[in-house]
Length: 117
Image (cartoon, one colour):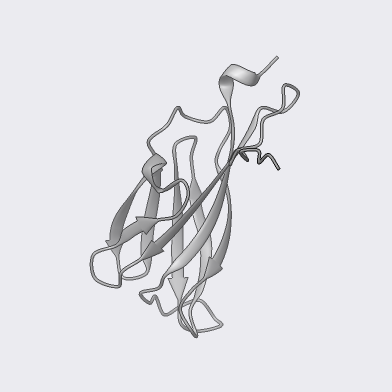
């Protein structure tokens, strides 16, 4: 029985899409883990305000993120995005007015320049 290695990114000549999986933990000093954690750094901008910085080549377009909170009672939402970073905002209320420390998992999508036709 042979096994095949599975690639973690999605590549397409037509779209040039890459997908990264990363998790943020730590309510004091943030830390990253996950399959692609070495492709990012995290900046703590204050309570419930984080920036994921892409260390790889910048995207052709603004980064897109899908978030899942890993902290009970905390919602995490995308904030400002650029071609090389994306802001994550965490709140402990439905009105999204009370910032709170939170952990999250993220899928980050980017369009790779070298694949663009």
